[in-house]
Amino acid sequence: MSDTDTTGTSGTEAGGETRRDFLYYATAGTGAVATGAAVWPLINSMNPSADVRSLSTVRADLSGMARGQRITVKWQGKPVFIWRRAQAAINKARATPLADLVDPIDYVWEDPNHKQPKPALDQNRTADPAGEWLIVIGICTHLGCVPLGQAAGDPLGDFDGWFCPCHGSHYDTSGRIRKGPAPRNLDIPTYTLGKDLNLIIGA
Image (cartoon, rainbow, N blue to C red; front, side, top):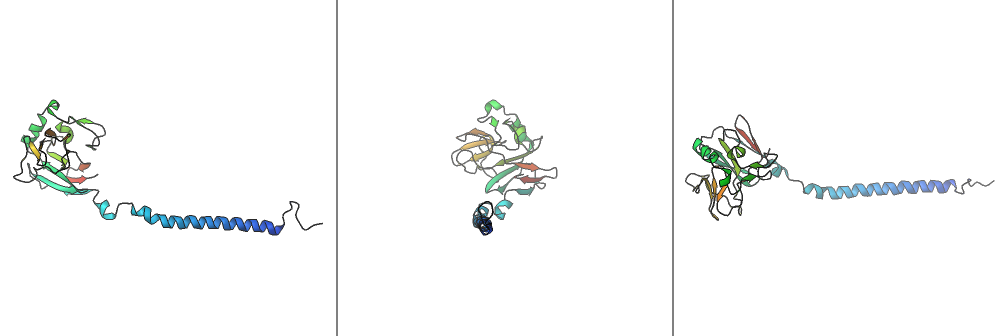
């Protein structure tokens, strides 16, 4: 009888195939790990850095603001106008009919605090039902200038809200465009305002 097995493959050859298979999988696995190790720093570099992540939300304590006072905070490199409105400004905004507005609808991408488009009524744009708190992004929707109106002595425009000095857009006391080339109302950031008047922008 021959020492060769019935399949015609010697034990030595079968062992060689097993070793080849092992070497193939080991080499492929090592290559995959090496590729992952080389690519991960590139992928990780595309993630926002810690200082950028820290700017994704901004906190402000508004409890010290007086009625009628306006302040500006920075959020993601943008000015955010915060106005604790006096009753006269609220009344003026709420007396304005939708038919008088250039942009009568606030879409979700303009005001992400709502889950569907809303009429640009003042009560839909304020942080509280009474309308005392108005929070808008202070960038003109025409060409991105920063409107005047936050600092004492600034011109407020024809509607007592904000005035963009670049091309003459006038916003009312609800941040709605009323006159000039701006096509839409001032955008509203995502925010929460607690009962303790701690504001979190970006959350």
